[in-house]
Amino acid sequence: MSGEQETLAGPHPTPGDPFEGEARIEHIRFVSDDRAFVVADVTLADGSPLTVVGPLGHLDEGARARLR
Image (tube, rainbow, N blue to C red):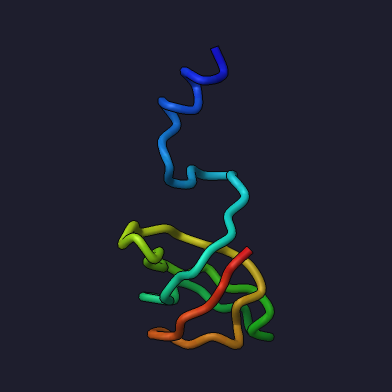
């Protein structure tokens, strides 16, 4: 049964899944006043879009980063 679940889930992260990989910051949706917390739209190395949250305030749109 777990093999079936893995196949259905597909190779791309889903909300709440941990993620680690290369990404390009496409659009920053929100930055906290102290720049400690960001919500951003990114593109993964395979071209898939993903929204990420976390301590990314040091990155600008267009930057490439390894996220985890």
